[in-house]
Image (tube, rainbow, N blue to C red; front, side, top):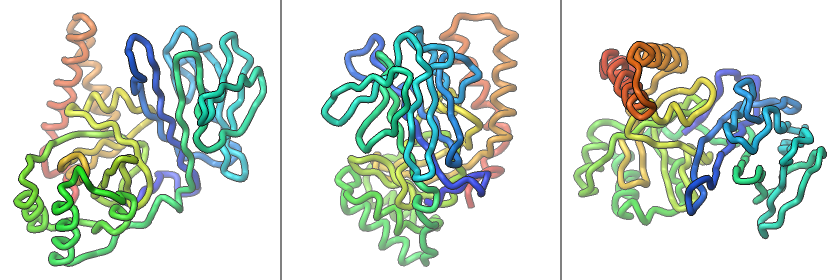
Length: 302
């Protein structure tokens, strides 16, 4: 799956995975942020809503610190001298306090902010991968046969598989996949800051891949839920997921449309006072209805 930005001049992709351990025995995934950045560009994080990465925790200062990409593609963490500070945790679990300093993140390290953790990965956009080959129907079935005969959950080498995946699948090929799998497919949604130019995602134990590039989709059965967990102005994707190892995008909604529908869903809630749980459920329902009103074919991926 080839990934391109809306600003073609920018050459680096930054993904920040936010985890916390508040009230749970294990680390909880709290959000994923994706950015396309230039060397020297700063991305600020903190509790203030004006920050690029908003962390709504009492232990986080309003302007806690920032990330900056140096000329060599290394991600540098800068501490703003806050009360609780910033720690860098290495692969051995050892912590280093920055104390108003800055330092480049090394492979395997992550940022610790008391009970909040930021896992960061950066890569050149050119290394994410190229669009897959244009294959005829027979070649598409051969490619899918290799997936389905592996029983999906035992698929290995998802990076290489995603690189060789066809740009598009014909309906006859997908029919073959459904018949040979013997497992029901699941309709899910995810949002991303990037426009995906190829329909196929492949997964193994190391994660999801698109045309050889690692992606971190937050799948949800409700489109509005995945938008709530994604920062910025994302594209919205509808997928058919087969056995948790292969996903094929069926619909793609551009950021301008997504933001318009999200605003309309929020406005519909404001007219109906309710508790937070009811409000969230109402927003999900309102957003789904607005999407359905567009028609299935309008943003279908041909």
